[in-house]
Length: 256
Image (tube, rainbow, N blue to C red):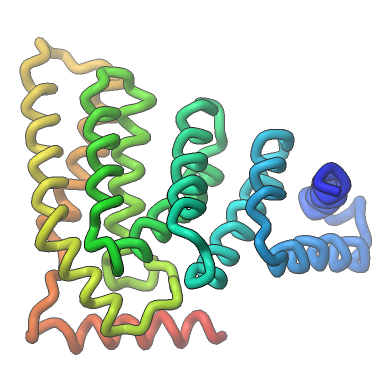
C-alpha cells in the first residue's frame, strides 16, 4: 500500500512539474487532486516516513511534509507524547543524515518541528524546546559548517513560530494561548538564543582574517538571528493590540 501511494504521488508530481505544453489542464487538475486527497489522510505518519526514506523527488517530500504538518495540527489532542517526540526526533535526524536535501524541503520540515515544539510547550512549559536548543548549541559549536547552518535554521524556525506575524503557522491554538506560549518563550529561551549568538560570534572573531566564505555565511546567519532577538515584539499591554491586528490580517489573507 505504501509503495502504491508513493508511486501515485511521484507520477502526479511529474505531471505538475512538467512544462504546460506537455500536459492538459485535466491532467494537472487530477494530479493536484491526488495531493489534496493525500493531505487529508488520517494518521499518515508511517506513510510519510516511508516516503521520506524512499522518494527522490523533492516536490513529493515537500508535499509529504505538508501532509504531516496538517495531520499533526489536526490530530494533536489525540496523539501520545511518546509518538510526538518520536516523530520530532525522526524529522531532525532525517535532516541531519541527508546533507543534500533541498533547501525548501528542509525549511518545511523544520517548520513542522517548530510547530510540534510550540504545541508541546503549552503543556510542558518549554521542556522539549530546551532540549532541542541544547542540541542546536552542539550543532553550532561543532565547527562543521553544514551543522552550524542547520542549527541556525532551527532557531529561525522556532522564532518564526513563536512570533506573531503572518509567517507564523496556524497551529490551532486560541489567540490567548498563543500569547501565553509566546511570553513563556520570551522569558525562558529568547535570551539564551541571543547569548548563544554572541558566544558564537565571539569565537569566530578569534579566527585570524580574512574570513573564509563559509565563516562569512555563518556570521550572516548568526547576525540575522541576533537582529531578530533585538527587534522582537515582546508581549506587553502596549503592543497586544498591534499583535492582534497582525493576527486579523493573517486570518484575512488565509481566507482569501
